Length: 446
Image: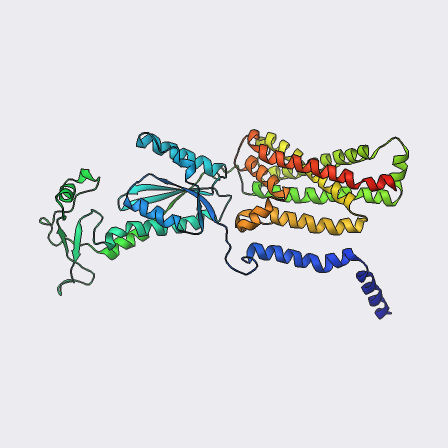
């Protein structure tokens, strides 16, 4: 009898396409998606996304130019310097203020992930990074790259045989009576008269004059010590968005979970149409004066309101338990939730009219919803994906919905800034509803 049960189960599995799909194809599909996200692509190569940055050069000296050249050669950075180039006019103080303001605004709006500010310092230049803590990788990555570029640029004088004052030096072997690491430094005049004049007048280059070797003939200069001090210099990191304790990081991820469950709820609610068609309820409804347009619009309104209430309840719980500032962003939340719930309801009706049975709907909805959630950022933050996967994510309305919620809860942008996300979600919802009406014709002609 055990063998009979096994044979019956195998026979049912072999003749059920939905079970075959869920059993064998879905694991392969999702393994492939997450392998592309975390495994570096089909060939296993490095396909890490480039970090979007812009640079503001307030030092404007040889060291800053050398650092910028090195940073632009880094393949992991994608520069958007044209965003602040228009502010490079006027006196230095006003120009610096405008560039810092534009750089901060670019980070706050999510146009770039990090803004690199190079400023003059005693040893050449120092760096300050304006970051957005919603991208927890970009700040650390850029910090390491910038620190290396700054240290190498500031070290050029030492490598060229100059101390930080700009005076040429010659290193001699330590004398027997002196300890190891003690070097005698001798200063030499510059080759040209112009350079000599500049060196004797510190204000000509804004640098302190060379030390008085006559007063201190045994003064020493250890390049290893200087390089150690340069290497230990820290990069100042300023978070332009996450400094407010009333804005927890969980507010970013609440939207991802909400959108995913909106899709599951809408597809489940749309499946009621298939159940009503199987048990003959649709025939009795059409026997009255109800039309298919009335039926679909009624279902759409119901699913939209239900999804809106579901998402609102989840965010209210998030405010009470996790500190999400829902009431402070009520206008943006209401707008984004309404258009997202409407688009999800249209998507659920489209799948319901596209499938023939409830089993087909369950299999197809699991594959599509999980795939859209993975690519759209509901499961994995999109900033860790490769650029190709990020572009593919824009074909899911998960990505647009999450981008809108991020603008509301994290970037504190006004409702008017949500028009791109609202437009995409509304157009998507309308197209899905039109397609659902086209596929529903078969129920009218049965």
